Image (cartoon, rainbow, N blue to C red; front, side):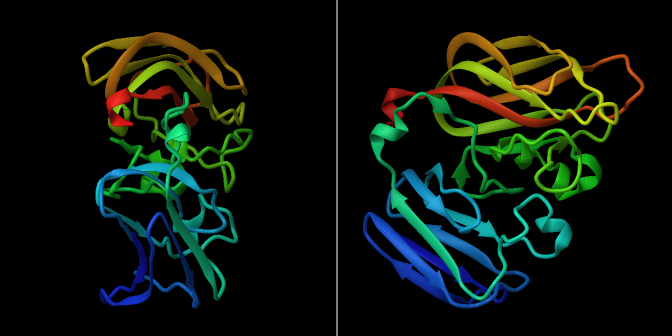
Length: 263
């Protein structure tokens, strides 16, 4: 395994290698265009911490992860204010404990998710995000942060749909998973916010679940029929008939287990 920091010119400025576990101490400030690259010898589950102000995350990696360092206030607005700052950074990666991998858990969680190809899963994507801003990006709905009583700034980031009734959010798990529950936490900055009264989850096996939602600040739990899939899409979002045009999603959780032959 290898972790390295590569600058905008493609030059490796810090690197560390290891077997089973690797630790990189990057002795310098980040600059615009820097990226962290994690490379593994074989596909599998890894515990990654590519920014020490963020929690370590369990992700599936096929070959290489590319994490682009967010630069500038508006790019960093959905991260803790201390993130990516300072003159020294600790980055770690380790082979995951397979007992942990096999547990029933929220399989959508990934605070390291970003736009575009990242090389790690789970991964989110949406057909619309409010004004294209990081504060309303799809990745915010799987970052594990549930603060939902306001709509700006951190830690109140969310997936915003720019008032688009055809908005869709897709979670790609990267492997086959067996799901049994969906949990949605709506952004709840009422009365600024509206809310959805109904949503549909469509799975890549063609099956669907219709979820009846209510105005609430709390996570809303929906047990579903077990199915083995690799993606889900949140769609057909029906807004309440209230004055606010701003429904938004703080978190989506997908509870289940990794399909046995993916362990």
